[in-house]
Image 1 (tube, rainbow, N blue to C red):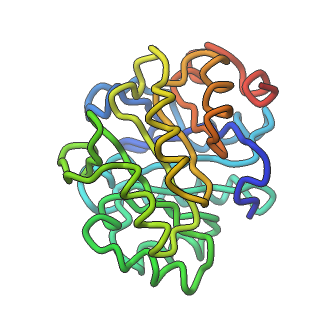
Image 2: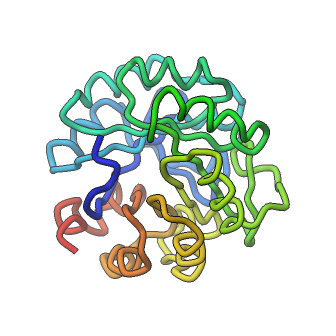
Image 3: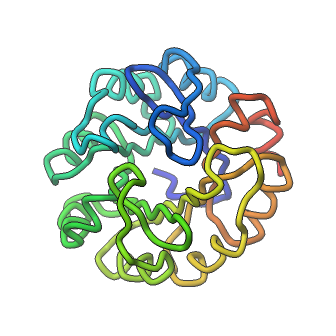
Length: 242
């Protein structure tokens, strides 16, 4: 498990109804479909990805994993030579450990971490470095349950809190710019990076290679890219060479 020893560009494989999709601003039915998630994963691995970002979108919205077969097949296709981080509908320690046992390198906790922060420490105790806490921000506030419910939490303050609970990394997604291909909010990322010593992975709004460079300069350990890659704004290899 690399835990981002060098800056990485991580392709997103978001799964809804068994297909790879990309949503706009987290709206459930806004997604454009891109076919079989295993094929999408294999494409990115062939192009040189070191890590895949795999999310069960139905799980994120419903609170229980809805694409278990597709997620398991994609993890299996990734293989031990690459990292895979998995999120969406992981609400319990059993959920997390089952995915880690399947071969996931990191589990992404969002809603569960907000509702039960101690869960982060329990999983991390048995699987050091394996918990990535997802902080999704909408208008400067952490949101949960598929980006539908506000929490009143400030992203930077929350990141520092979860580092204390044992999180191995933070996934920071700016929902305001997610999926729109209109650019990033660098300042929001910098605030989270400055609040913690663990790796921060940025997500949301990446449109051009300049966005990737800006996030790297902001201190992000990696950047998750979805729509821009699927729509051919730049290639994975181009993004990795920034």
